[in-house]
Image 1 (cartoon, rainbow, N blue to C red):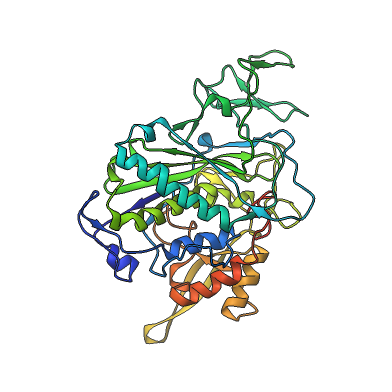
Image 2: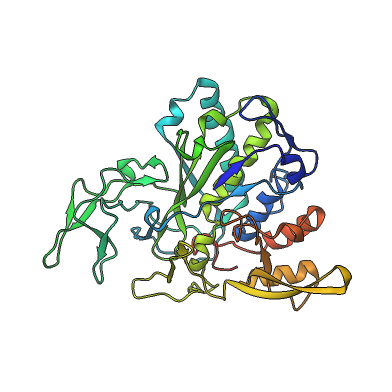
Length: 412
């Protein structure tokens, strides 16, 4: 996901927010959150309308281009030991483990303090309080990437085996995952099974967490693009319910502002990024489950949905997103066809119908403009503005997902 700032921000955001120039020191964020942040919570669910929740302003959504991770950047079907879903229907707060890359430690003292002691602690605290989950057992121990991006799986074996060698480093986005967070390297070098593990055995992993977020401050190629502040995504999904268990957020070091008047804007941006890492992404639509834990998109024998090579992501079924042709009345009594994409999972349909007082509404529209970074990765902006959006948010979020352990999306 990429968040950018530009001269058109006042027009795009509304509510008096503005930006002038580029880089820290000349921008002026005056928003205390964003409509986009609320819209993201609509999909992921679990946000409680409580006094402890940080207020979020009702300005227009910020320019956002979420980059769906490529197939080679995400490891699916990660086996977690004893990662069964607790059968008791008990909702508890989401636990996010934040791991800072050494690039954060190398920031100037003011920026390091901002990132480690203010921005991320406040953003994480907000998300942990506002998400409720059915807590899974066990610890998070991530899979290793393969040197050639090629691997095999053996029947009745939950692990994947790299063909040849494991990669020297396993990355989550641009951040190198610590060795102690990784499963043992398992390889297949040809011949008959069984083939086994290589290198150090499994270590402790990450206990007492539902999601691990790797935070970097690396001056990557994407940071060299004009006005990019940060970007984020998920990188590993667990085997049982396909939910992301690891993700990253990278702040472009030259764009980190320590000016007090810009803190609220930076904080909202960080929340924005983390939500993308938690899974609001068209790349995960094909992995949604129903309330009973069954996939809403059919799977192949390897447990994965079909892959759409033209889009570069897994193809969802019409039980999740549906393409609908509508007729729009325009000037001079003319009618033109208009294509919309609707999120049609049962919970979304239920809450959308309540909000708009329309018992035949098919679903909730997704954004259909702005290219792949914007399309399908946000709600349709023109439908959910200001107070209308707030009311819909409150209705929806109080009910939607209370079972993170089964998958944040399995009750949508």
